[in-house]
Image 1: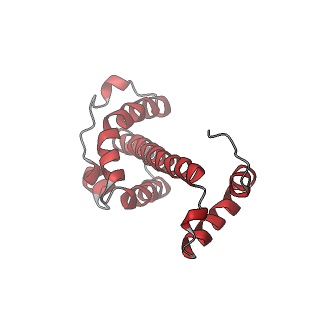
Image 2: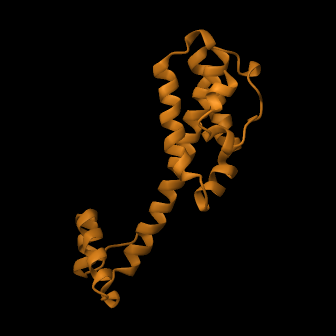
Length: 152
């Protein structure tokens, strides 16, 4: 983390990040860019990008685990479970439509799948070796609305 400086904006960043964001937005809207807290703004934007990538990876991991459980434990399927898969798909779909987060999801898929294997095996009691060793689906498959019906 960057050390706090003596400027009022830097102090505001340290004490109330949301108020600092509001102030940054107001400064930008009013065209007073020379007043921006560039040091903390760069830190904040970097943190946001990292958070977005972590969120995509986390959603992908959980969705893949649910898909594996759906396929390998058909007797446990329910409407609520299917709805959970749909919610996870919806949350991820918007993130991976295009751009940096799509590229991140594609590159994170193998590791997210590895983690999902562990989750699915732990939750189902299935031997991990009975599950596919590599992810058999693409990002587009995973977020497709009809995917669950096609694999059921």
